[in-house]
Length: 81
Length: 146
Image 1 (cartoon, rainbow over the protein chains, first blue to last red):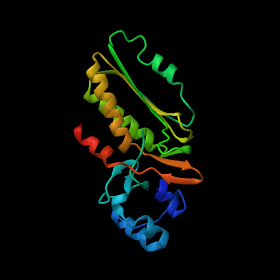
Image 2: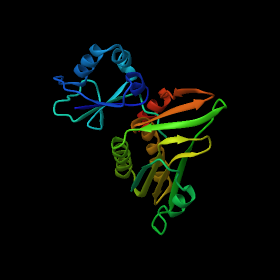
Image 3: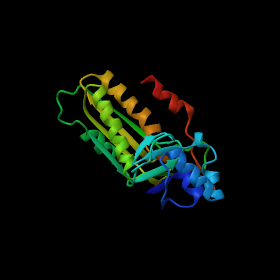
Image 4: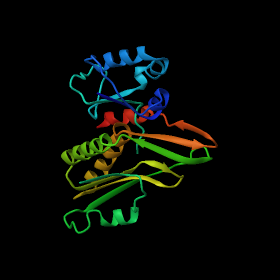
């Protein structure tokens, strides 16, 4: 699946998008996998309360299923308007 | 209902004048415009990042919820992304209704949801420094009134 990062999450991880092969079934499991990869991921995902997640472009929470998902995105709380 | 996400500036005057024009059953039109604000002085650029695809979907969903909830003749949402300078218009919403209460309330609802449920992120550039604008608790709290 594609994993996308926006705003300071993108800057901290150092890329906007990457393709990931994973056996994770929930967002939380995917986060655990990413955290274990490298320090930059651990830093970006240190405080989940500072992050929001969308699965296939729908805002959801960290318990959400990602089975069959095409796209998971992580970003800080939104500041539009 | 029209939702537009674009980088280039929009013509506020033309958009406001054309909105619900000729709808003789609409007695009230409310417009709101968000402008790049230089809070501390020294802001050179406000950069807005968005999530292509999801941003449009989220705005359309919010606009549809407003249409379902209030008696509206039309809704317009325009939101820009990319770099812009102080004083530039970032976005606008417009609502048309038979009566002003629906138009005002729906415009406020659109703004409240758009601020914290549409994927946009603001970054301020000032004097060589750049910082992401933090979301405010008040903006999240504002949703509870709906």
